[in-house]
Image (cartoon, rainbow, N blue to C red; front, side, top):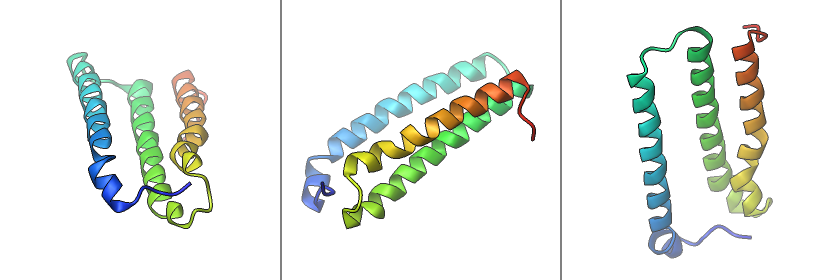
Length: 107
């Protein structure tokens, strides 16, 4: 598999990326608004939300680097580059969050 060529990415793939990004942004804004309305979070819940957000940013960054850097060389199938970081790091988020909320995580 190869990465989409420049004209396709600009003309054909751009609309999907923008609309998908907008849906994510609106959904994330709604979640943040609900969290603000609920009042400040404290303790384990605050740390758990922070770790989840930071790990989600790690997944996004890792995916972007994989697609733009590794994807140029056709070493790994494109589907693996897109889904690999999510598949590998989502269990880490779940385990880490559960340990923080249960109080068994040591800093």
